[in-house]
Image (cartoon, rainbow, N blue to C red; front, side):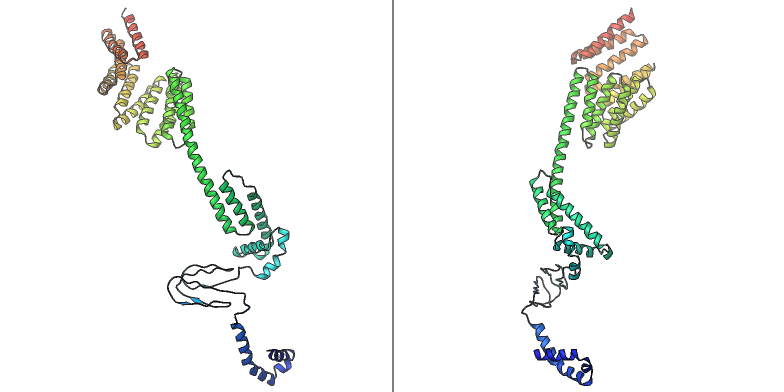
Length: 431
């Protein structure tokens, strides 16, 4: 081997001989021993730093070679190659590349940045790999390396001060920080995804609990409103109804519509129709939005009563007729009886007693049919007022006495007092 090396060195040092006829002949003679020598060197296993192992699972042809510089051909098999290079899994031919993607000359050139940027050489390798993968132009590398290094440091600083009450989230973020420090960004991303999933689950549970507590607090305010109504404190009751509506989550539209309608009703008892009107309108919008026909009918009836109190009979009648149509559509007999009674009062107020009496008799028949004694008593009282207006005091008194008996029977003290007062007025009118 040393002999051949000396001959080759001679030809290198004396080119005038190498390219002469004798030199070319000598080179031709040396070709075969040199080729044999180098062939044996390339076939040797000792001293190689490359070790390739192919693991086969599945079916298909397979040529397997193990050892340094080995070449294997795999077809139609599942492959997984572990090492410092690429990892491939799938069907078909496999190419092995033990080069991590960053040429050594680039790494050497930019390694000097490590100390300046506060990064290890391994991190510089990772940063360079990112620049190559994203195809960043070489003239931007200096700026981009500094940008990446600064963001990397900022991220590590933030993760070093993890703020979480969940120990598992703290642990995952600490591990993510360790992975980032080592340049294992894929692993860090997965760890941070796990931390986020835990936080989102906790948020969902807390929001569910908060929603339940808001509904509970709203119902407590509704109870307060009823408590005030029992004491005829309508202004205070309206405040509690509105507070209950405000507390409800956006999803609880039906209860919100009910609370707003109730607040409007109490304000109407105080003749505060200007404040009641927008509450009724909000309630009506919500009932229509969720398709609650019963709630819509009730609110329309109340809006009719509100406009009646303001003397706007045309608008009142419009709302009441809409309410009546809905209640007849859904078979709400009690609501139908109430609305018929309210329509009668519009005609009564305008002096159209015949039409008013027609609606009152329809309402009375329904209320007697369904056993609504309080409603029946109200109808009888209203009928008496029509006969009183016509000067037929005997009939008026007869209906008032019927009404009074019902109110006494069911223990409606307030209405009993009102009817007793009406009887007194009737006797006064007869004098």
